[in-house]
Amino acid sequence: MTNTEIRNHPPADLEPLSFTTGEAAAILGVKRQTIRKRVMAGKLHPIVLGKVRFARSELERARGRPLKTEDIWAAQQKARAEHRAERGEHVAD
Image 1 (spheres, rainbow, N blue to C red):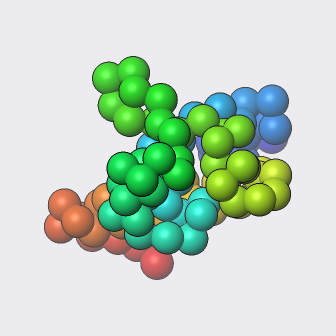
Image 2: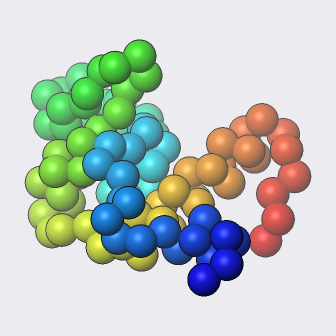
């Protein structure tokens, strides 16, 4: 496996245990503002260690089913692309 393949498809044991607000939104299929509203309403419980993060178990509870590796990586890619677009950077298709 090449370095690029490892970066694009890391082994399952390297799956993240916490996610950013943008990644959480992508995983749950909602906007980041909705995530913030759910936190304020007490429906979603973040971990605050410097930046706000959401535990994998909390997202699985909110989602109603376990996260799959492909869901995680797709959500992270979507969150990164949205972040770059907000900053005005070019986003490749």
